[in-house]
Length: 135
Image 1 (cartoon, rainbow, N blue to C red):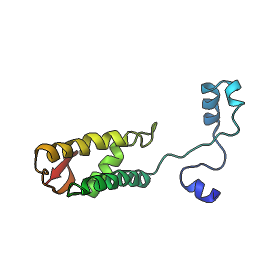
Image 2 (cartoon, rainbow, N blue to C red):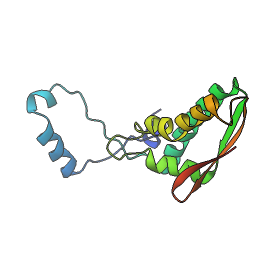
Image 3 (cartoon, rainbow, N blue to C red):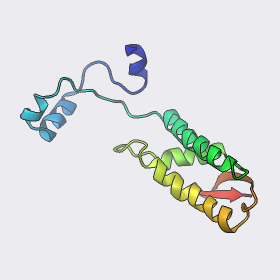
Image 4 (tube, rainbow, N blue to C red):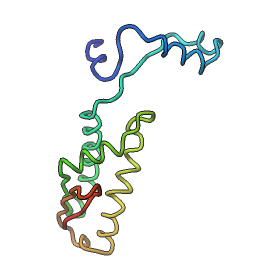
């Protein structure tokens, strides 16, 4: 239970005075007094963010399977998506928009009008800081 919770982002131990001061600045005492507890989180490690990328990739793979399309991402492409789709303030929330813009939209164009109309295989790599699609 609690040991596992600590490993997935919960912070145990003392909080810094800076954290306490930030909470006092942001929230009025009336609100803070209604809270039972304050839970602090560590930033997500890059390996966890990569796993989030892979989760989105697996979802897309199953959607494309019915159209007889398979695709794979190079390790560099996964790392690029992990870095671009993670925001220290918002966590991995921007990831879905990034994958929509960088992968789903280009694939949709090829499925509707291009090389993937009858199915196929796509390898997504990183070249010069951009994702490139090999059909």
